[in-house]
Amino acid sequence: MTYAVKECFLTLQGEGVQSGSRAVFLRFAGCNLWSGREQDRATAQCNFCDTDFVGTDGEGGGKFSDADGLADRVAAIWGEQAGARLVVITGGEPMLQLDSQLIEALHARGFRVAVESNGTLPAVDGIDWLCISPKAGTDVVQRSGNELKLVWPQAGVDPAELETWDFAYFLIQPMDCEDRATALDAAIRLVMARPQWRLSLQAHKLIGLP
Image 1 (spheres, rainbow, N blue to C red):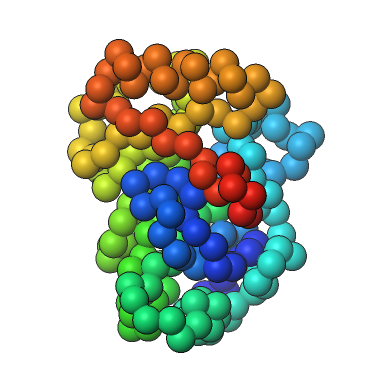
Image 2 (image 1 turned 90 degrees about the vertical axis):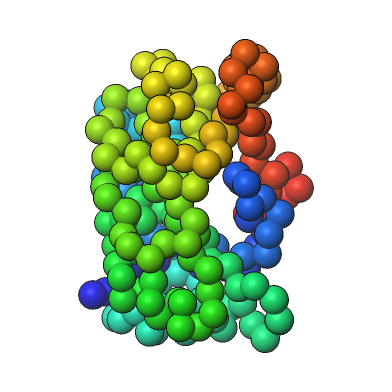
């Protein structure tokens, strides 16, 4: 299988329970909820995405002909530093490309594999940390994992229903939109009303990391 990678670089994980961890960030190109073209945003199933996942022209991006080649790139980006190796795989929608061969190749190089998905496709076996970020109006089939991250506010999403899904952590992340103050206030109010949730901020943006 050929893997299309938008970007791959060393950073600090900026979101969720593992925020602040040193990680190789691997973003696959392509998504099943939006083409990535601005002219299609208004009619897309997910129209608030803040990510460029089109093409393979980002930092460390490219096309990789096999799992070992991509895993070698991830290992080279991590370097020789000791300690727990972490790769965070996202998109777009990573489940369009992620397979057991790549997970096995990353494990063979000592990496713990974390994945963020919209949940509309089943997760591949072998993932070490799975974050699902559901989008309103979509059919989420992956209703279990380590953390559920809900971008808020989203009309048509009921947090009470999501609380019945099988996750260890429930996170509310304010939507990155024009009215960020209102989104943050809405997220705080939800956590105060429903303490099963916790507030998650995009720390990488706050400190100026990609």
